[in-house]
Image (cartoon, rainbow, N blue to C red):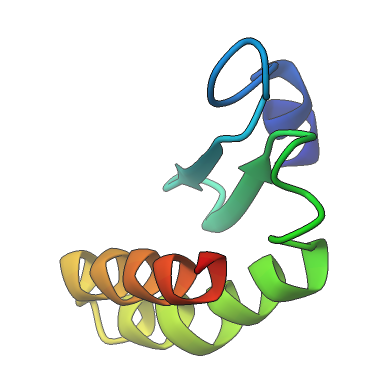
Length: 81
């Protein structure tokens, strides 16, 4: 998963590199959140891991994929404020 995230490049605006992308790999059953360098100070690796573990993964285990993504995105928005 890390190789995929590393290949994605920059996120957000070119000037600020302030975006975020959620990457899902169904065959390998992995989830990752990649942030731009302008976002890393707010959305740390620890926060991203927490969102994956507490908001996304539990729903995925129940096969509630849309709910997992929705919960994860909503939590990321709250933490980004």
